[in-house]
Length: 84
Image (cartoon, rainbow, N blue to C red; front, side, top):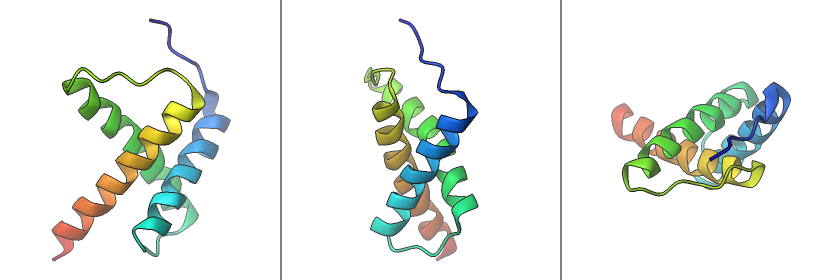
């Protein structure tokens, strides 16, 4: 399977949008920098978790966005559990 090479610009842009959307959905008050970090790291976390269940997202910008959103939402959820 070939992997798509997004490049730094697209990773930051898509990761930022995914993190921002997850932050809005989960009603958090993070800044844009943290949204970008959550989106990029969240994408890696979600991709790893999905691979454990033999679910491999298609290599595309939209797949990166969806996994980034799911991963960022998961990271926000875990952060809220740890804070309590």
